[in-house]
Image (cartoon, rainbow, N blue to C red; front, side, top):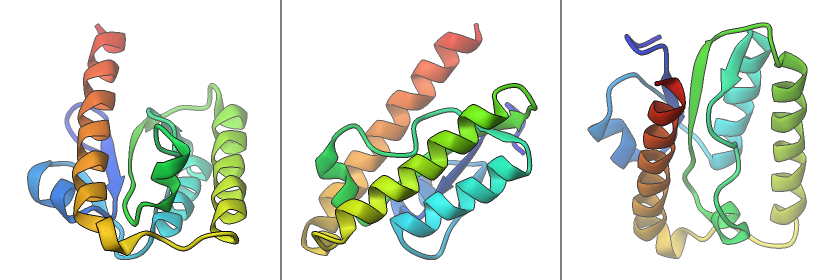
Length: 126
């Protein structure tokens, strides 16, 4: 893990290019969720919510999620959160496809949401 005890799990090429401490997932939004679930089972915590800021973002091809230092506290909560996120994602994707047509816009939005989550995390850690 990075020097600040955080790592970004992402499939967004913009995030991979710009940030340090990135675990790049070669795959889909769902693949990012599954990787995050695996990390939670290894006792890491979610720093930002695994689903985006709005239902529209679930159709994005990209997702960036911040993971924190190893912790036992809240493990059940994080496990339930990620499992619920995967179920919710699967439910929505049965009705619609990923919006690749607007992938550049989604990559930028995902980056902006990540920046916001990083700033919020910094405020909470002071």
